[in-house]
Amino acid sequence: MPERDLPRRPGRRVFLQTAALGGTLAACAKQDGDSAADQEPNRLGKPVSDYGRRSPFEKAARKFRESKTPEASASFTPLQDCHGILTPASLHFERHHSGVPAIDPKQHRLLVHGLVERPTVFTMEDLRRMPSVSRVHFLECSGNSSGDWGPQRAPDVQRGHGLASCSEWTGVLLSLVLGELGVQREAQWVIAEGADPCKMARSLPRKKALDDVLLAYAQNGEAIRPEQGYPLRLVVPGWEGNLNVKWLHRLKLTPEPYMTKDETSKYTDLLPDGKARLFTFEMDAKSVITYPSGGQKLSGPGFHEITGLAWSGRGRIEKVEVSVDGGQTWRPAALQEPRHRMAFTRFRYPWQWEGGEAVLQSRCTDETGYTQPALEELIAVRGMNSNYHNNSIKPWKVAADGSVEAA
Amino acid sequence: MAAWKPHNSLFVRLAMAALLGAGAAGAQTATLGLGRAATPAEIQAADISVSPSGVNLPPGGGTAGQGADVYQRRCQRCHGAKGEGGEEGPALAGGQGSLATPKPLKTVGSYWPHATTLFDYTRRAMPFNQPGILTNDQVYAVTAYVLHLNGLFPAGQRLDAQSLLKIKMPNRDGFIPDDRPDTGKSAKKAKR
Image (cartoon, rainbow over the protein chains, first blue to last red):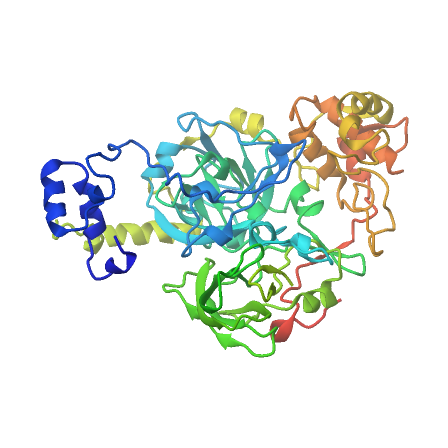
């Protein structure tokens, strides 16, 4: 069935899939002239099933490096194969520090203690009974694009930018739970700890904890995947991925940050004078073109839709500009609506490729007026050893034969 | 179906306002009544977090000599014989004075601002393949050994809650608050 028929004939796809089920319906469809049954005469399709699988023709997959310690590793989302703004949970990037724990939700507990009036233990059932919210937010490891500081550049958008993903998260606002327990005045920080073997822990400031942080138990309409923190994780909108503690089992309210390994030894940004920035929480506004991008090849001159993703840890994306001439001129791209705060925003830009060499890049501006910088601007301020939080503009070079590589 | 609009009812809206109000104001009475009171014993059992001011440092202690034994059995395969690091584990010692150079070496001695972090992390997360297996005495001892490898603790002295808190790490004052945004017209004025 031609794809172009779909917008004019809503509901038709559903009807034709149903048609394969029974002779009567199939007969109706046949009268219509282009049924699915026509493609494989006299054979039925697959029956209903309990949990869906993608088409065997689809091969999009996470990518990860070989490692002797794969339990403390990362896998990268194939952003070049993703559409719209949501990342399938099965392709959401991973970063684990001691492997994915196997947790029975019936046994799982969240302990909230420290400077609260009523230290409390919650079951998953308790949390699911509470008033819930669903919100679309990106997660980005602050080490995303860390390989792009030096002369070596990631060859494709998956390895360069794939430690970022976006989901609809469902759960309970942490502010609601803390309000229930009575937060004491001296409580300025919340120490969040996971139930993974290494008990990964981070310190979260009170102000953020009482703002928009989620105790999330669902992702894209189903229970959070084990790799993403099943059965419960923190979602800290817009803040570096490591703070979004997975397999969350304990929150301790304290007067001071605990200076855990992952907020001192790691995830601090070393500057040229030898000082390091501490608690670099917000992810700066960032965008990247996912098509055409490194490793792809344009099939020929003519029309191509340049598309990509933009996001900001400080709010909504207000503008994305695209340059097809190496940064000499910039023109606004169309932004997919609705634009959620601290979420992927899809941009699209129509392009006629004349067949010659071209350098493509995008830059975004968020609701605070901050505009994504060039790599040279970041290096001028931060030097070459800050490692984390590289949000620079990513140029892709299109060769005359249509092949694309990192510029 | 169309008549069922619970969120439009005055009662539900008032109830929700009360809930959210409790979140902002702090110590009111619980309104949802979900969850159960945590007992002091279960809090003590679960709370392994050690603060930089020493809250929750456990009793016990050990020397660098005792720690060397633990280190050789549990740590050196990944971190190297003298904490120089290896293929699977980062360097733990060395690098002091390197942070402002083109090739900084970030180790416990050159980079970590608090010795309490070393105790806390070692106890909760090490050794990599069996996290949490070390006793408090072993954690104190191997912490003493790693500090000793960095020239920050004498070989014969016993490390415990009191002596651990007296250690000033070389890079204690090496961290600054986040001063981003740092580029373009949004950049904050340089405070450094």
